[in-house]
Length: 470
Image (cartoon, rainbow, N blue to C red):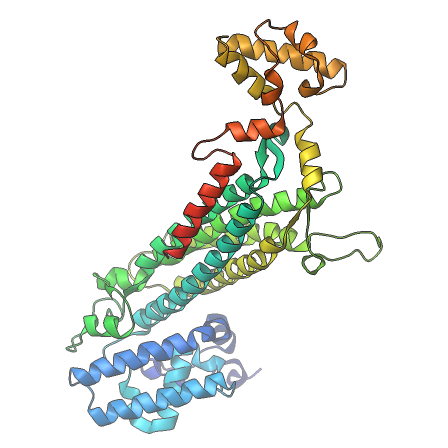
């Protein structure tokens, strides 16, 4: 095979090719190119270039006429990209070089002046931050939509009694609304983490150039302002090599998916015939190719499965950065695909949950019947005895004996007679049956964080106020 078929024809055709005497090997060209995936940052690249060009004009590096030419050319290129007519070329390596080369094609030599005072190193760092900031805002909106639907459902189900579990064993009765609000607490922390991450994303590395800054009289505060960043980054070396913000976002996404996965596991359990606590609308389920009776909860199962994918992206980025010396290294090209997919996956899973959760239908009778099993009011009996003056450890033993007695007879505590209960403690009176009911049990937990219906409604009101303040 001839050399011409194995390498790019002319090294000087590269925008950086002046120092090279030999063309890039064709395989290496494909291997090192990133345009197949980083082109999704094209609009952010143009946004950053417009701000950079405006600043160069304002400080006198570009003339007003040159700036107008560059700005017009970039806007035309944005139109080409939006229309799907942009000629992406692998030989130009990445989104930045493709756009710059196209700009020069359209407006001539003035296009070559756009890159004055910057490097691809600070350019890509800026693009990633702009792209991620936009995704964070979309994810934050979906989190808010999910939480709004979740809290509304919790308020409607404030009186619906279901079993609460520890070790997946029936423990104490709770309300379905209270359980849903536990999910909401997880998501509230996720939202706080996301917004905290956004603060560190929203710093401008533009102007750090390759690694040491630039000798041109640039105004980094001005480009930061034009791009909506809070401030420029402080150190040029760190500016081009930092990917903490991407790792931090993936850590957020991993925790978010972990929480959605826990909720998904419960939805899968609750839709099973063994639990039969809820019904998922058909649009969130699929059937079996061989078993016509099946209704599979595919959406929560997929969310549960995608959690491992996002966890993997977090580990990938941590591993990517762990041995890199300052400043920029080509390794960092590998940051985009994990970050892009983590953001896409988090957004998709949130959208699925935000659509699905408000449509959940509680099977209240089944939940109530399940709560009546497993001696879920045993702790209430112990608390009752303590209020009668019995030491808690003695009360614990009395209740344990009562439960063992009930098990032998295949009955629940509430089904035992007063006489049967009194053989274990003379302190048990007629009023014991008030605490042995499921309704009495949940109503007794009447404090902040408790499962009493009144507290659930109050918690819903606080949650709505918090969401509305975003």
